[in-house]
Image (cartoon, rainbow, N blue to C red):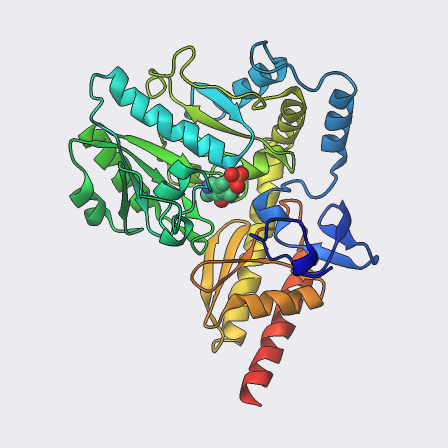
Length: 397
Ligand SMILES: *Cc1c(COP(=O)(O)O)cnc(C)c1O
């Protein structure tokens, strides 16, 4: 079917394949062709496609109870929140359906904190150039890419942008109306750029010295993606509030924001809510997914394969210096920064039955299921090697 005949709002531009089945890191289209999935629904299918533990959790719950809304207790929420709190800086959790909603809740929590502290004038959220926080109004205003805002009305007051990685630039923007900083420890959409530990420590110090909060957006970088449960854990810096989604549901739509008791002190009864967030289906899958991710041997394995991937990508940089600028990102959230538009390379990889993503800044993005093995990594990197070699041959012909 051509795009003109489609009844889907044309905001996406998917390739022609119709994927109908997945298993682990492999995914099949309706012609029976098999692809290696190295993007995992953009860092979502953490345990791969149709992992038996999640299929079991979902189908068992589906036969029992789907939905009651948050006017009643959902047992799975208590269980999962207790696990998140056990393993993180946070004391309280609010469950959402998506990353954007987690971001909205996180920013509302930050502003409400200052109101509860008698400083309602503290409303400004400082975000970073190249950042992405979702597609709601607040999220596009917080995101550091003007394209997301274009045509969607006036820029909301209370959002400020800073360059990514420049502590002095942030310092210059901090003032008596600063509510919070929102930052991805590893920028996803913006080009798979990791913030340095030193930078995150500097931001934490700045927040502590000036009485504002830090929100980490770990929607893409979290859920074991970088080899720790949350990417910020590499730095030793903790936020006051964190938004998560994508990988935490392993493919079932869910997210959450987590906060310290102090940061959440304004979030009293009735000030926030959701109909679907934290529903029994999402919680059944979320609990089962987290139980897998939080096994120590699981993340050990992620680190081993991530090292393997990183070395293989560095090798590509050495072999194709005219095309590859460098390797970016962390763990299994990796960018190959190219000297050319990565979309052509992405398409040629798809022809070779390997699925990858792209990100800003000419970056080819790899975010495979965390269960990918070394042989599959080899398969992907060999395909990439062949595509880059063909590209060079074409360019010099
Ligand atoms: C994907 C993403 C979001 C938005 O999540 P949705 O589930 O698409 O609403 C927010 N922040 C980051 C860093 C993301 O990668």
